[in-house]
Amino acid sequence: MATTDAVGAPPAVKSDLEDKKASAQQQIDPYNVAGEVDEQGNIKAIDYDRLIQEFGVQPLTEEHLRRFETVTGKKAHRLMRRKLFFSHRDFDKILDAYEQHGTFMLYTGRGPSSGSMHLGHTVPFLFTKELQEMFDVPLVIMMTDDEKYLYTRNKTEGHQKAGVAPEDFLDFAHENVKDILALGFDPMKTFIYTDYEYLGGHFYRNASEFESLVTFNQAAGAFGFGNSTNIGLIAYGAKQCVAAFPSSYPDLFGLKDYRGPDYPPEAKRRHKTLASIPTLIPCAIDQEPYFRILRDRCERMTDPHPKTSLILSKFLTALQGPGGKMSASDPNSAIFMSDTSSQIKNKINKHAFSGGRESLEEHRKLGGNPDVDVAFTYLSYFLEDDEELEDLAKRYRSGELLTGEMKQRCIAELQKFVTDFQERRKKVTDEVMREYMRPRKLEFGGNPSPTKPKAAANGDEGTASSGGAADGEKTAREDGRGTKGERKAAKLAEKKAQKLAQRPKDAE
Image (cartoon, rainbow, N blue to C red; front, side, top):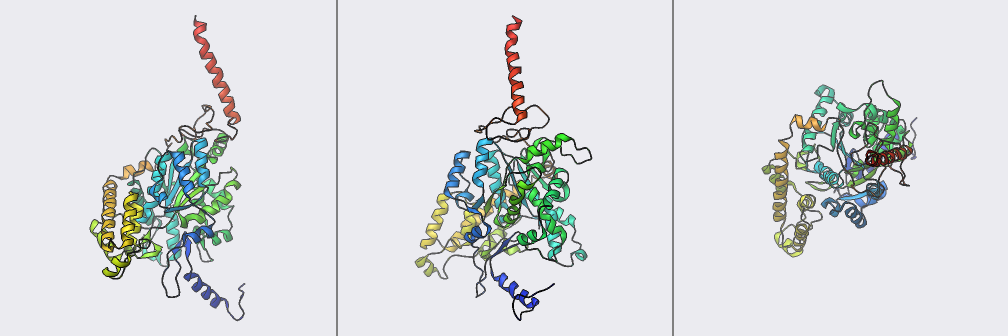
């Protein structure tokens, strides 16, 4: 039953007023990224400090960077150093888990909405690749072809007549998979899949249980769903959430993923083992609402999971400047990984928002503003040399470096990055892609010297990792004694060693 809260304002009018007001506010969620619009119609830069407060996440501090470098023994990635990955949830706890127990799982994903990724799409993957190499841990990448199909059908009318079908988004996913693999992920410890091709087994069991923990009102509040949202999109969030659970992927940890009627009792025990492995999710801040819902329910699953940790990035600004992000639906807003060197040059020169002054004389006198200059922003993401980046900013502010010169430096860096990418992309054949997408035991080492190492594995089928958690009731114990099964295995191993030590004496 419709009601009205404002005297004299009918529901339809009130709704329109609310929509107009909302459109002027900053809006960040998995389906919308837009800065605030002022009274003159100008789009403001996204306020990330405000997002930290609204989302309830924590800022990534210098202390976190020092802790990261202590644990890994390596310099923090440029995206962390420059606070382009700027906030987190429990990033310190994932460092503790790695230091103490040796391993965790990395998880991220991509919604394939076109046949080619753009520069902005590569940012979380470049960072994730570095994390995988630094920590030597398994990585799962989810391609949400089903979600993109459901969202497109929900947003736009007439797609059935136009022939848009799930297969179109599956094709996008395959092309995007090749793009991602061209960034250089290790095939021994990387599993990538599309929802349409993979979901089932333990994954679907987790998704079904998670769906039961989320109400429509909770989903609507997090993602902006309304009465006209299709039920597929409403239910989809559970899949993206449980994709962060290692227990959704028994195959990757050397355990059988039972998808038929035969589900032996030991499978439940092993599922519980995988449920105790922690996960770190590198992603853009717009995806955070999914994992806020996830973290609130991790410990409510039948087999409780640790709360997932997140490290969250800013958006790579659209060519037109602050207030938005690169969009696959607007070719003039983005540099695509399929663009030629000529196209990159033309886009930067023609469309990249400048922080320079209106005249050469004014620029020389007052200097430019690198903080809003798109060419400088792109260099801050892709230029490795901290000293050169700082020098560019200093010279731009002083007026010594002109806007055209900043653009030329940006063009050269992006042309090199994209050209090198395209050379690697040619080598990603269908056969290479399918090997990454094949469910199999991943090989990873983790922390070679955890402070709380586990007891020897008991020799049962399937260890949970190549260098981390072993098959048992828990991956680790805070008291360092291991599980009951592990203590028993350790005693048996000790007796066996004693017998072997006595054999030479018996032989004499």
